Amino acid sequence: MSIKSRFRFLAGLTVLIAFLGFGVGSAFGDTDIVPGGPWITDTQNVSLKRLNDYPQLVKKLEQIEKTSKGLVELEVIGETNEGRDIYLAKIGYPENDAVMIITQQHGNEVMTTEAALRMVQFLSTGSNKAMEILDELYVLIVPRVNPDGAEMYWRYNVDPDAPARNTSEGFYTSWTAGVGWDINRYHWVTDWTLSTLYQNHPAAYPENPVPEAVAVINAFNYYNPIWIADFHHQGTYVTDEGDSVTSSILWPRHPDVAADVVDLSKQLCVVIFDHMQQFGYSTVTLYPGGTYAGIGRNGYGLAGAGSILVELKGGIGQKQSGMIIKHAYEQMWSIFQATADGSLYEVDPDRSDEIPPRGSWYYKDLPPE
Picture 1 (spheres, rainbow, N blue to C red):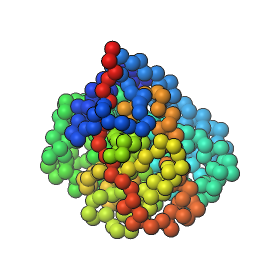
Picture 2 (picture 1 turned 180 degrees about the vertical axis):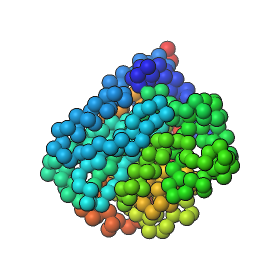
Picture 3 (picture 1 turned 135 degrees about the horizontal axis):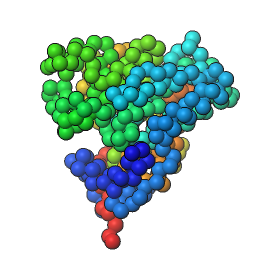
Picture 4 (picture 1 turned 90 degrees about the horizontal axis):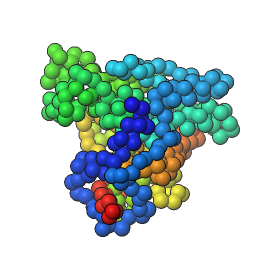
């Protein structure tokens, strides 16, 4: 089943699944939220033709590489358990400082991949605006970290040998055995033996069992980017003022991340926060993330790179997908531009205190029949 077909099958469950997964601290349907909807209903057939399944994604990347006149080079950085290649798009000139964006670690978080693909396409044109970035930066983009999970349209990778979830033992997996691993808990960049999984099961897991995380780690270590930005989707949240949260951002929170790395990460977040103020219906808040070292945001910060998490609004239908893709694209662009022109380093990292808290989970009651 393709990603599009699978999405149509699961669309009717989206509201229920989201509510069950994030029900604590909910704000319910009597809350006024701006903008409201459009909301996926239990009878809705969601058509998301803009989504690229794996063959379409590969075909478009190869077309971009072919027409880029040498600006784009594709590299296969790993292979999934089901045999799909994981692609890294390298754009520009290797002698420049590298920066890195990854998307879709979670297979059912789809729109940021479309934004990343759009960014690869734009930079490949070599336009004057694109070259403002590429004359200064070597841009690295992994547009789909989790191609197996994307085809299944679920959060995890695909691994029939994955045990059931037990986080205290290091098993950040599905509650059901044989599904897969949560890739974004296995970014132990510098030393796998420090991982919770190895500490508890060194004989069974002498190496990282998540090939997608290993692929990103290897690419990161080889190209040594000055920063990495990890794009995801969250659910739908609302601020105390009734504004729909379009994205939430955060820097590393692990206590051992160096202060200068935290400052660089905060500067990236402030750039995004400032840039998005110009757009209507854009509300950027602070993501309430934790300190676990295997999360990408923390793992790459511990490895010495600026590192941020960007969580775009989720639980949407096709009528808001364009807006969310546009927002993700603009956030990518803002940190490329600020890094290339040097304005990033002039930002006061303490201004990160201005970013408001995320707010409450929003559950919209289904309309009456």
